[in-house]
Image (tube, rainbow, N blue to C red; front, side, top):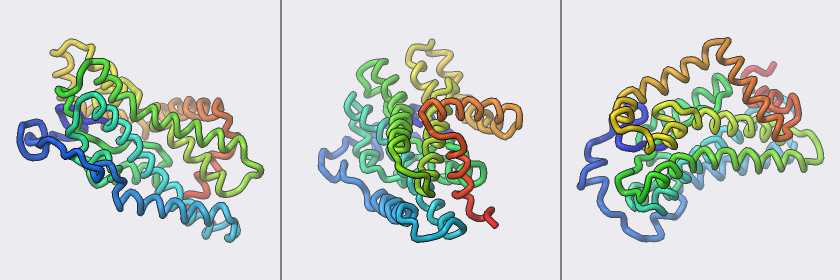
Length: 280
């Protein structure tokens, strides 16, 4: 998700949109683009746990489940970072140089504006419900962007990265030679990417889908939508806990995942493996 002149799930620090403090002109140095140690550490966790799943040194059971848990969780945080990097790099290329100063180009999840809503809640939804909740929130100074099209492109970049990741993983699944715990976890990751992309593309104030159309809306309407954005997002996610809405939404998600060629049952197998604490 991007965060324009208002907070996605709460008010943004006024200093962020003023001419002082956090919005100071960024230094054009390589360190502003270098992947952060935090991000590299998450990549290392994904690689190690993925190797355990790939090698099959553990039998089906709680051992592989724990490996799948770390692999999927680490990969999910990585894709959250890539999603927000997509917003930031498009903003940077279109005039908002402040994203480099704020560290958004380093893929560091600790740089996001709301740690609770950026990382904690998405991980909680993942662990408890297997839902790819859109996470992350980067502050974009939309006044610095060169056009309304640029503003729309910034909002679209994040979900498009999720869709691209889903397609790459689905192609890898299609080329696999056997059904293994590793590929079951990958199938679950495809499901999470599709879920996150579709949720983010909904035209709900506070989500990227609304951000795509917001530049073309009447300013009075956009101002009102900005005020209700936090409640609209929370209301949408509350709907996901209503059985009828949940069933209809995820029926559509499963249909899209099937269109990508993910085998029937593979997502369920990956999710079952991920929730190792439920394994007997």
